[in-house]
Length: 145
Image (spheres, rainbow, N blue to C red):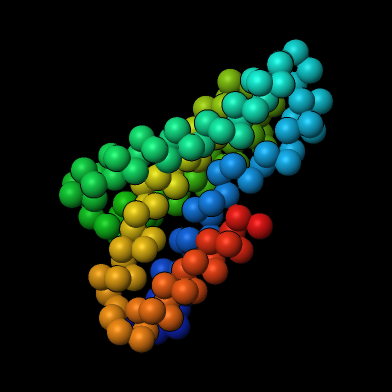
């Protein structure tokens, strides 16, 4: 697959779809409160904010991980962690599991967060780079909605 193929560009842009999706569940806090009747509202709000801690920690660790396993494998690892952690609450209604999975979801995003933009600037230049950077921003906006 070459850098000029449509599939490669689409793949590169698609990693930006879930970058801003960590806190987007905030609108579901009242429904989650009903699902966890024994938990306080602040405990439920933790579910919406804990991905940011995972993102913060793993953005800092991502440089080390990139050096060890490479950029492509870091993106794949981050996406796999986010996928598995994003699906865990579907199969478990335990509060601790949900909070842990939300943290790990953020960790997965944090692993490849910096690469979403830097890969575009590293691979492309000129007008094509500018165009892809604009599309990358649009993909992030689509993902957050």
